[in-house]
Amino acid sequence: MELKSAKCLKYAKSANIATDISGLDQYLNGGLQQGKVYELVGRAGSGKTQLCMRLCLNIQLPQNEYGSEAKAIYFDTRKDFDPIRLKELAEELVTRPSVRQTSGLLPTATEMLRNVFYVDCHTAAHLVAGLLNCYKYLAREPNIKLIIVDSISFAIRSLDNILARTELLMELHTVMRKLQMKHNLTFVLTNNLAFRRKRRRRFELEAVLGQKHAQIINKRIWLMKNGCFLGKWSKTKRFICKLST
Image (cartoon, rainbow, N blue to C red; front, side):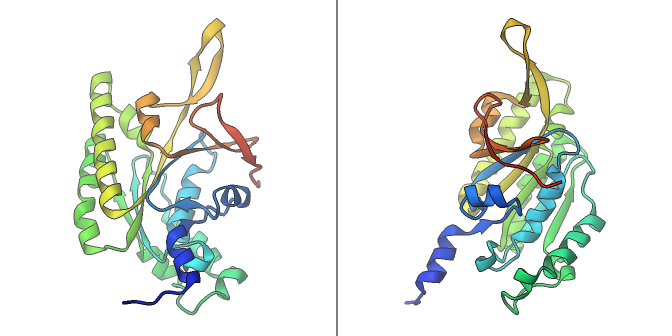
């Protein structure tokens, strides 16, 4: 029987991934929880892709630094992934004083890049195939605990037929749910915003892909000019913190 300290048990249960948005991490008790589905929504240039890249690095940190000492897969549908920027973020992370003092087991910036597996998805079909291939990836790399899909809305909305969009979205949900349940993965999706017509000719900025999609998400994080918010819908979202510029 293996003996574990109470401190180790605490970290094992939390298994969070820090976002580096201090107010959000505090609200989420350390960051994103393992085994949950999160969605980042915001307009172009709001920082969704950069946050995704940060998460791929932060998950590799020791548990006492709100990491999981794990690896990540990055599905890129928009060609927004920038390996040069990822390297810059990794070098910045490993030289951070609080991180350098934690443990001698901290990976180097180069090792961090090796622990992020990139998948280029040209079409929606490629995204489905890539997610199905995750069973093979996870068999080879069981320490993968984070899957990024940037962006799920871009892949879905590339299809012209509404019925085909709905069927594909449901298929993606099914695959993600099965992977999540079997491997206790954290999923982070990015989504776009669009104006939706409401009553009395009013328009509101809402996340696209509709209500069925929203049901699979545990938390939706809004990255806006006036701050970071949490909530499934525009009317129900609540302010969490300001975003540093």
